[in-house]
Length: 441
Ligand code: XLS
Ligand code: NI
Ligand code: NI
Image (cartoon, rainbow, N blue to C red):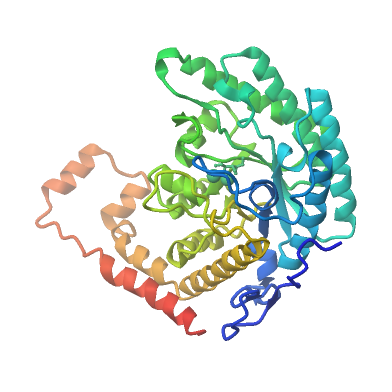
């Protein structure tokens, strides 16, 4: 049975195509630097946004028309699996991602929940046999149910901590069963509302203990996926512990976990933290911590996680610049942690949204690649820091100076000259590269 009868397999038709259900830029087979776009970009579909959620917002109920809407309970979960593999196949995304409760409903207790999960996991495994589609990552939803009200690994309630451990234990087993390439920890409720009732030190220490136990258990069962922390500064919690990559990295280092984890960086979370997307990617990259990406974008006029499909070509280009410089994402990928707007409620909108996201990343990839090929930013940066290549600058970076020597040098300086940073022309150059891509060059 087909759930998306009106949609055929999406093909690459090129820049001149007017077919909304065709790629204009993303050509999965096109090779860049010896790799096909499909191999390098590693697109993933987020199960929760695409198959589970109904476009509810805080002021109104769901609007989504979905061909599986007439099912309930486990039948609904099964219908979603069938629909999802049809979707993956038609859109041509090689990966998907899910939270445990996206794929199977919670039962009355943990045993029942795990049983539901086992049924659906077996079904997914069966579908995977006839499909190229792989699991980029899975995770445990430890934020929706009321039990997580005070947190999961950072809860004030030890019984909840134990429940969280059991959920992640199961998640690691599921990941292993389905061949997940990564396992994600997003601390939706790991944080606090107010310090007035919070033991900050105990909560951080418990988070460290929790992650160590997760690492140990993965080793024990031979699950070798890359572990990823997904930072977000706030929402739903007022202050979230994995605030951004820099603070997350400090946490991992303090608790001796830095060699076990990398980061899953989400564009909208970066901007909520007051950073650009590319800042988070750069910080992770220069520290060898760039693991995977949740490809979406926020609305600059709104202060929350709107999870829109990515369309800002400028930002995407700068993000792809970081990813290329990183040598790709390794076992990570570009997961569309993005939902169609509440007004885009028809099933076909799910395809339009993914076509747009994939095309936009293909543009960014090509433009960034060209920028790097021509060494545009590299030359600018090399020139800007050229004073460290010789003389006193070289002594500084080689550790051959101290304050006395530097004072001696400074006292004998006649005139200090700075060079222009040339911000405007640099931005114009990046735009020029983008516009050339529009022109198909
Ligand atoms: C929410 C997060 C979430 C994670 C996975 O803001 O982005 O969807 O990606 O738990
Ligand atoms: Ni995310
Ligand atoms: Ni998010």
